[in-house]
Every structure is written in C-alpha cells, then in structure tokens.
Image (cartoon, rainbow, N blue to C red):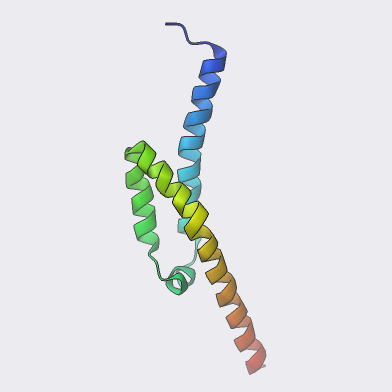
Length: 95
C-alpha cells in the first residue's frame, strides 16, 4: 500500500491536534497559580493526572482535554479575575 502526500498530511494533522490540545491543557493547568485553583475549588494535580493518563487511552485524553479547555479553563480564568479584583479592592481600602 502506497501512502500519498495528502494522506500523510491528514495523518500529521490528526496527530498534531491529538497531541497539541492535551499539551495545551496540561501547560495551562500547570501554569495556573495555586490560589486560583483554591478559589475554584478543584485540584491541579487531578486534572493534569487525568489528562496525562488519558493520553495513553488516546480518545479519553483528548476528550478530557476538550472538557478542561472548554469548561474548567474559563471558570479558572473567572476565579483568577475575581481574586485579582478582590485583592485590588483590599489594597485600595487599606491605602
């Protein structure tokens, strides 16, 4: 069986997306400060572990990454913004 350039490009695209999205989710989870995770009420270690273990079960890791990026990441961003706003309010009250 001879694989052409188009087929190779499609395979490369699928593999890149299949690895890129979980890596993005892991990097975001790892870079999010502890204070944000605490304010959100979830565990960084749990999400990173789920995504990494899920990578070995390819569709599961990809789906968990999508769930993280679509549902958890926006909530973490809101929690970070709220914490920053509360911190700014406290500083302006003290000053």
